[in-house]
Image (tube, rainbow, N blue to C red):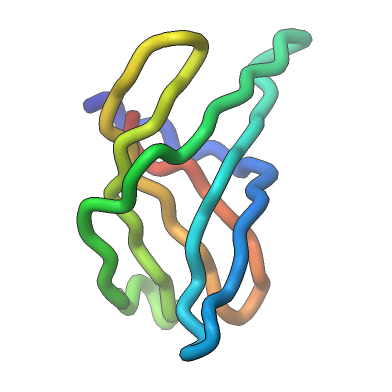
Length: 86
């Protein structure tokens, strides 16, 4: 997995218990835009990093036609998503 730490756009949903579930994402590198879909969430846990409360998701994703493992981080205070590793 390569460390990226890129801000991304994410579509997700909340279940009845209030748990966040990522669905699809996109990000831009230069002028190129990339899209992907979350196939399965393997692990999820909460983390505190530099005073920020984060939800960390390790997921199997379909990215540009191939499957890969990716780690997403969601900052609870700022409501921002980050593609941390892919």
